Image 1 (cartoon, one colour):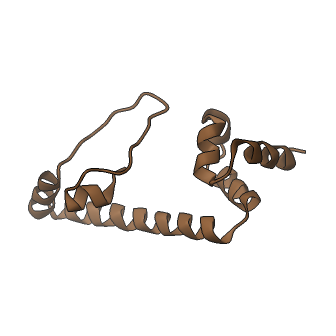
Image 2 (spheres, one colour):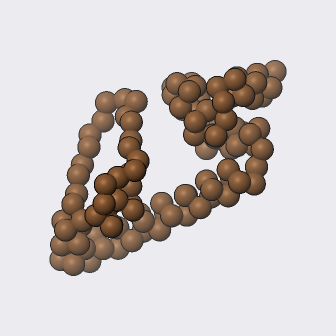
Image 3 (spheres, helix red, strand yellow):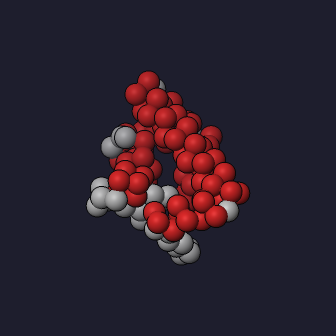
Length: 113
């Protein structure tokens, strides 16, 4: 996870990541990334694949947000992340889906009837 604009343009980040569970953070500077990529071609390939997959996921998320109903977004979220719906606080799920907490409650009720 990264704010790629901040990382690659070397500017202050406009985004942050909030961990909901304990985890491990690994940090890499742009200079460190470039050094790894130039010295280890497998790392260059790894970074390219990760960046490409991240871009594809972002594009899919934007398309979903622009072209689907809240119900469709909710159903896609449940399909992609079935365990998260019960583990993540509803306020974060609502923010991710671009709906209010109340709308999320209605979507949940409609789906679980």
